[in-house]
Length: 302
Ligand SMILES: NC(=O)c1ccc[n+]([C@@H]2O[C@H](COP(=O)([O-])OP(=O)(O)OC[C@H]3O[C@@H](n4cnc5c(N)ncnc54)[C@H](OP(=O)(O)O)[C@@H]3O)[C@@H](O)[C@H]2O)c1
Image 1 (cartoon, helix red, strand yellow):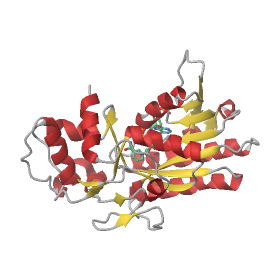
Image 2: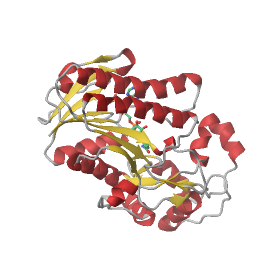
Image 3: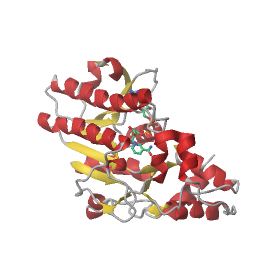
Image 4: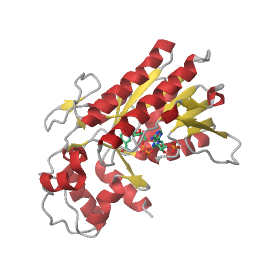
């Protein structure tokens, strides 16, 4: 299959592209900053979602589009950064839509989204059937992003929206900043640590994307592991695995709101997103349990 990937240089995209190439697919990559590649199976094209510019050759003959591009959400939520977080996602997806519309192709779109679409709740377990949406900034960003992605259905393209949980990888993302202080004996959860964290090992996330491609799965899918953990268990499990003491109390919310501003909600929110559709279709998770996921990440951390 020829697959177009955006956000290919990011945490998820880098591992995804390696995986897709290993499965014999060829790749078209859309990036803001192109580079040369010797890999005969990879072609790199330039786009600028900010200026609504795209190299239309990137679309030629593609069977699927995996859209991961977007400015980092974990940057201070100033008015300027908020605009960039939202616009980078909406404009890039709209640019892809406009480009596909000009062709007679019907690629399968797999679009990233996030579990932040669900409102924070300490009790409730969300499945894909729940149509309740958070009014917070991050919830609003992903809600609008999903709306934009759903436009592809009007072009009769298969459309899959992955509501991704906290991606755990030894190469970057949240695991390294979460685990480093814990290794040194300074691990602490946020608040009372009772908030649910719906996580997924990066190998499983890459597997989910591949699975959705192969099985032509459509609609919204919670891309999370089947066993979310509360934050207290998350820190305590990491401490146990690295053999470090864990004695610090929870970090009070007001301290983090001073340090991070409005963005502090990302670490105090509680979202239990159950991957019902993946479980129903018997997706073969490699890391359904958090302790095995942590053991693997610690073993592969350089
Ligand atoms: N990692 C997680 O835990 C997680 C959880 C839920 C959802 N997600 C979503 O999944 C997607 C991929 O996640 P990731 O962790 O791999 O992200 P990432 O490492 O931040 O990479 C995102 C990619 O998007 C492109 N990008 C960055 N700023 C952009 C901008 N202003 N306009 C257009 N493109 C821009 C970049 O590609 P180029 O420089 O090549 O253009 C970058 O490599 C993101 O949209 C993220 O919101 C991630």
